[in-house]
Length: 198
Image (cartoon, rainbow, N blue to C red; front, side):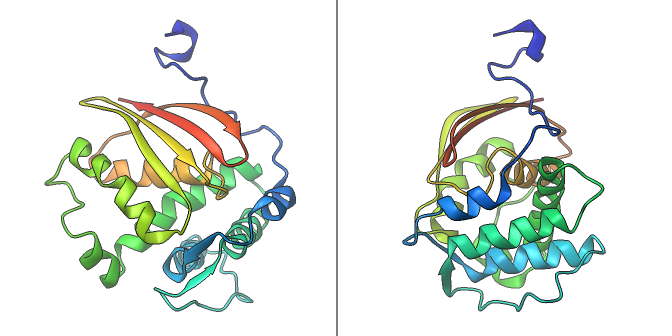
């Protein structure tokens, strides 16, 4: 481990780094889909942040939609927060996204028990199941699940794993009153490894 990264294997994310939003939308394979609830979560997050995407209709929660549609909505969300760099904007949308999903009755039933009573390690073990339920192709592999450290690998994930999905994780850890240190290794547009420690 590199002492300059606070004991993490991967470098801290650079929220100011450039991000080609449109290229990410274009890169999503046509066969990839997500459930409508994921897109609705972004819409709800933006409304809660005071920047509603008024031209975006709500989707049927359990209907499949092209993942490119989800990524395009995320791009629109990032651009609706012009005072923030795109990576930081998507991170904050991710934090609010999980919070709004947790308010949804369907999601509360679907992931019953994903709460404080489980603890971080037990909740983290459910992440692969959650992503399989929400997406046709996105995969999350738990590489390390220790009392104060979590390592994840995202594959076939075009929804900005190094910023939006980081925010989703941060939002989830708030349930446990945890503020993690973050390390990110981007392998490709669709593969990212994240390290969180606290």
